[in-house]
Length: 394
Image (cartoon, rainbow, N blue to C red; front, side):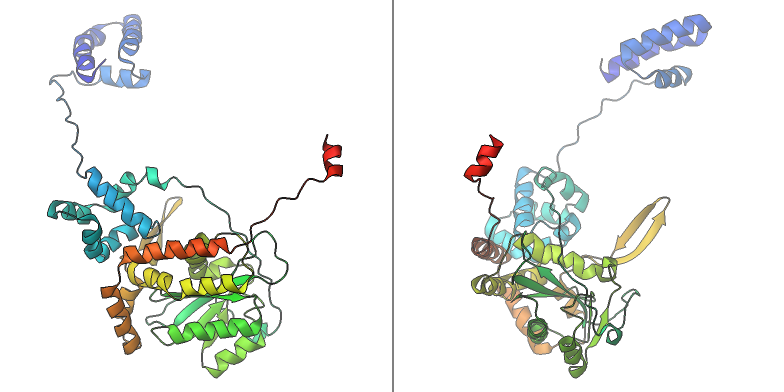
């Protein structure tokens, strides 16, 4: 029964129900629920309400505001940008627009629709594309017990107004076998600008970690003023303590077994390393070299120049739920341009690169290099079934 038919039926039943006795009302109510399919409580409320006077207007179906061409372009940008959150995706559309015009031939109308679409609408349009399986992350960090008294604990909230204060961490690439020597990714993210740098090292010897941090420090577009790490022995050691004292870098650490103390870098470990490299084992020099070509080249430029990020401003308690408020999504480079304490020559070179580089081409290059790196991984082998074990199973 349609909406109009139910209204006509209600119009006939309503005066009869209001004038009927208790027993008769029960019979009318049973019949009304059976015919209309209404819930009994809702039917009682309708029949006891005001009489239906005006015929309900037929609701017009809403025309779609965004056609398949807009959705196709959104999907292409979303995949090329590494599947960002809808708020970040909306923020990167104006940055990528010149290259979207080049690759997809937008008309003026489609361009207006693409820039007008909201983050919620993006979520609805990309809902089917977002059904992906999740993976779990396993770590292999062992706490360092030496020199802890020389590295103060930092538990308060980061409150910095200039770049240079960063969190660092090491991501292992051991796969299912943590024995022997294998590759690690040294990851650094700046708190104020969200600028992120990575370098691959073979093993996690103290000297290699210090050398990797020194290489990252030379490439940063700002001076490194402070680092905050976990309690792993790869950081809490004499080499890194002496290095930071010599270079006048503030060195702090989080509390043992409290990952929230290093929440910024933990999030980057997933988006910038683990999601790309996977959980397989890399333990050869060619693999480490290929990872560094990616980290120090196209991936670094794509993530820092073209992919926006958001920063948590505050948390609000609403009943039993916590509501998080974020600032406007910006790329790390855009946040960097708002700062004064930067290296002008490095920033000028990055600005020229951003105007010249095509983010779609960078994304394709990253995918090609990732395939090369994955081919150098050592995947776990299944144990072979011997004749004795086969006979036992039989």
